[in-house]
Length: 221
Image 1: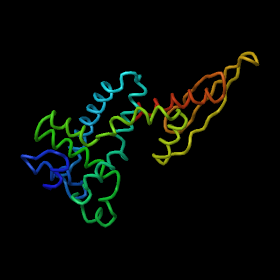
Image 2: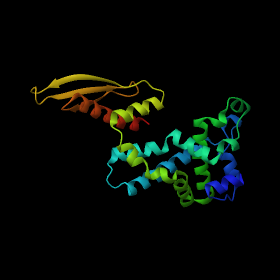
Image 3: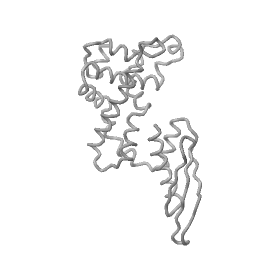
Image 4: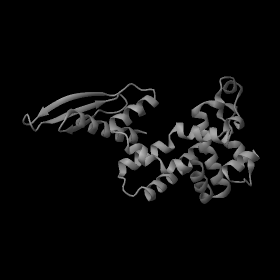
């Protein structure tokens, strides 16, 4: 526990908060679920604030995608492994036998719970500072990473990460003169309502539909 406090850069006054942050619901009623809820909100706010001030030329959609990239389960689980949280998690016998200490969902939840524990022990400034330390250089990478990929690629990667089927694109209308056509395409994922996009080529219409679907899925999340 002392080593963990050194890694996160925060010494707890009340270490019982940290112990609870590392306690999975499989061990009993006094677990980290409520802390996870609070930590998720603190994390989301700090990431949004950092992106708003660091990426001045990004629009709302781009900022939303960057935030989603930073707070997603895989990123938080990666941070948890850097902190070696898995070895400190308090799990019930069933979760221990099934390897719960290495599961992304459990590690990500524990990361959020630790953020909340720091907030309750030391206040919002300490919690926000720790979020910045944990994310580190990840805060400066999302802009270039996300902008380098077109909407269709981002949508496909997001669906694959969720274990969902690949999107389907259907041309529903083509109008205009032969040399000046406009394509209208529908994108379907089965996760939310279909989205549409228009463009001077089928590919650009598909990109527009994929972009609309990404925004729709962000709102759903």
